[in-house]
Image 1 (tube, rainbow, N blue to C red):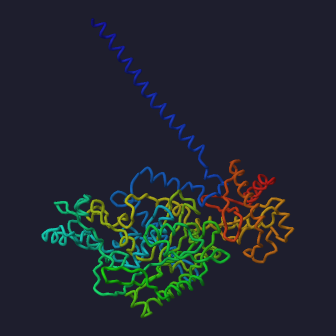
Image 2 (spheres, rainbow, N blue to C red; image 1 turned 135 degrees about the vertical axis):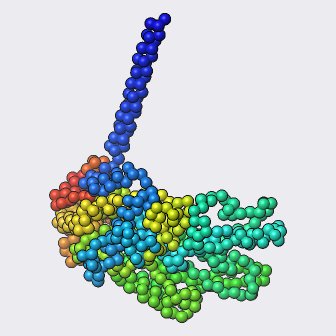
Length: 631
């Protein structure tokens, strides 16, 4: 019997070993299967690191920034509090300090002031009052993309127009009136519970109480479940306060309602249209300024439209009646925001920052000294917020070369600025910087004081960034720009931009010299728009006197007009050639609409970490000729 037991034990051990090996093999098989899946994803995805990927305003990733991204992912934290992300919080503050200095500390010639001073401040130097990088008089954050950065600019500009840098008053209980079903005791209880505070005061009291999320605390009702009326505090509404009550005291009451009006150019990014909708400003209060032939905002038109807006006789609108009583309201339209484009998506145009700031400050002074306007708006502290959307071209702040640096002349006088390092300088997506000269505005506009997260007793709470953002979780994006800055230095980043500009200037030269190509508009430093013109179309253009080389024009922006029928043919050529190049796997280049052309044209940009020299210029043009010769 003992021998049988020993044999059974041996067999069990063998089975256990076999099962263990099988389980281990199964796990290895799963790992291999997943590796094949990952490889397939990479194989069938667009290789944006390809040297001839020109399709978007991003491209190959700088290896140093990629390594930084891997570090950030491996730590797997959120940059809302110093407690959870101490290193990333200080990195973000330091990076923002450097960007602030590049943007706002320039002299009249665009050069940095105090170039010998060290940049940024240490942890011990950080002002506890700031939400950004801790330097007096400004604010900033890393944000998830240029569109959200433009939304942030509009959001804080609207807050500044209403409250300055003070926190917005908030109503902690919106229940202000009850139906006739209420007993007197219940009505008194409702009125006692209805309070209005500011976001700063909401931090007081029990600062460490856990967040309460019960719905009945926000919108309490009586225990007998009788109906009640919810009314938003009229002082916080964009509607006239008298709209909250139809019991008018006079037969005819005239009131003023102010609409805030924003201005953008016709070349501005489409995110502003979405931003005015999200913020409630409304697309009807977004005025689109036409552009000059070169794509710049027409500053004279901006000046005229602002003048007309401020001077207009505000028409009476609407009426409300309660029994025999009525009223009319006059509507004020007040300019409060202008978006400046520094590098438009297609053309690559840069608005004249200096001229736009000058116009805005002129009309600010006019509004604040016009007695009639002050009487109507009840304030003499109007502000027209100037925001520079440099998502594409804002990296020009790194260059010390005049032809590039001058594109940003006047940026030191704007109210806010954004740029995307993931576009021109090769950071991984998404990496976006937002800075403003107005200290504390981000927290004033966004703070909710969530006590379960932001607690002054916690370690390093004075450095927390999260309450200044309207997101909760925050990616540790700053490390990517920090790594680029640390490794290349600002001059190295600037040098890479200058090399891109030089390569594109050579591209323009060759487009003019090669018979099957033609510029579609006057090129800007970071964008070149052009046509590929097959021989049959080129001959038709020559027959009507159109020189496709552009060499006969003293100014390239004075381009000959292409007839409608030939434009239609050119558009078909652009679409078909793009498809052929895409399918070949040798190049991905976009065709784009352009305001001064009826046909879509090709656009080339050198986004990302993209070494590109004269031989690449020749190869790109050769490829287009090879795949388009029979079109």
